[in-house]
Image 1 (cartoon, rainbow over the protein chains, first blue to last red):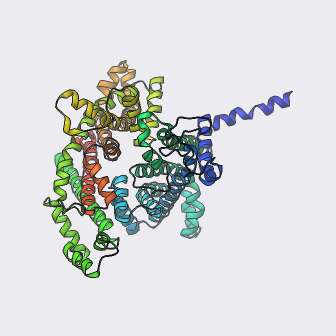
Image 2: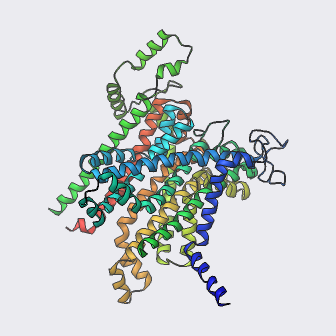
Image 3: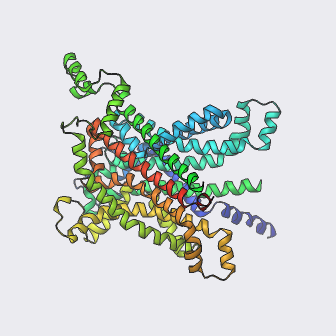
Length: 285
Length: 319
């Protein structure tokens, strides 16, 4: 009896560490990530096949999310589109956060001219609204997946750079880094073993936030018809091509938009709770 | 002495703003005209004879070096001549001139509605922070901020135009004869834009005021027995005016992103719609000029935000 009572104690504590909303956010994110890879396999129909004579049908057992403006199955189209929305945004976020992190740490450790030149250049980049930059790039190069990844990656690098740089500057002034330097460790070692491990929490949270911004930017572009091009479609393009069904309140317009909302809100919930967990852990240590 | 220091900061900030604008113009020009292949080739298509391409290159001035073309373009912009549209040959300045007032009207209407609304919600949420009202406002604004603008706009159409049938879903600015018509035409775009802006502004206003309410002097006022309304109105709020003005200006810069989506959804004949059309037809002079207008507006709002922060900081004013 007493053994059972003891074993009952830890779960509540763990639940407090991983609040319900955080778990929910995590589950949504994991689900969409899985769909980015498996969406095409799980989808009940082929994304391009016309399966219903009727267009903009409401939700039925046969077509859980209704059909689109040509009578294609909406659930399948959303699942196929996950690859573009999540995949392209993930690639762009990796590019933005990766280059921001590398440049930020370089600026923090080298200081002097490197820092000054990098900071000025990236400040100029962030003086353009993100949508404007993306529109100008798409006007110049046309719209294709590599162009979208590059444009979104570049426009969100300054933000990642600023966070990484300020974190790295703060950590580089810590005693243990000075000790490592006095020990005669090289810059590469200090970056890898002393600075980087101490900034993973905030950098990961920033990664999630940047992912949300990029999903919103790319869906907005696709919604304008300037993002992912037909026959491929991400969630923004799905909203655009079905906008005619808005007057009927067709699920074909709402569902892709709700998919985007679920993804961005899920990431936000995950970050908020992940952040709290990390901060508390950091304070305790 | 004091005024000089303040003046120097303001002038320095203005100079920095101009420099940013210059650098942005360089970036816009570089992306749109130096990196991609050949505008002349693109315009004439693959079947064009080399002679035709060469002639058009000469006509467009593409044989000149890039920096010379940049200076030429910049000089044109400053003097109000932004070149001719590649699609219909009309002067870009005339195209923009016809659309700009519509967009400014939309932006002004949005600002007039959203600023008082956002201030009221933000300040009341900060006053009653931690209550169910505050948590509700925070949840709602966070959700609006983290979903795409077109979701907010389509949801607004669905509720107000489709279900309630209060408003029409499309805008036709040409048909305004009375105030009633004006409201019906503008309501949907303004409403959608307001949702986005108000959410941003509420979050920033609330944060700015709460920042002040945590300060020691507020605790002092509470200990002296001042009521909650007095604490907020005569102690915290005067000190929060700067940060709040800063927040308002920064939130208004979200208008620029929102207006692109909203003008497209409602088919509103504004400059953002013009630019989106320009991007899809790859009409470079038009895109360049529109991009510069948007970037200038953005930099202006950021500058205004910074100036509010500088001018309202008592430590800078009374140094």
